[in-house]
Length: 52
Image 1 (cartoon, rainbow, N blue to C red):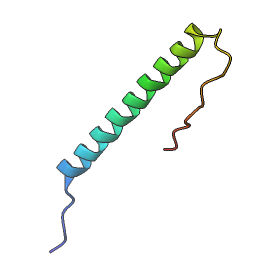
Image 2: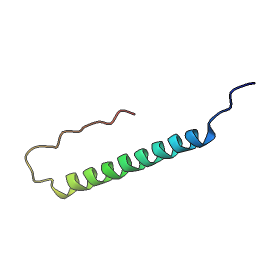
Image 3: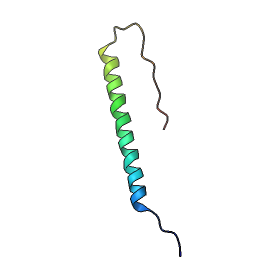
């Protein structure tokens, strides 16, 4: 008998990835807004580049 895929686990992992991506997007928007709101500061914030 062949092993069956665990579809609920795959769906769960896909949902976690979707939530993580949305959170990263939200964080990028907040960072961008913070940079635009404070251009008078002498130093630019360090970009933490998210590798994914």
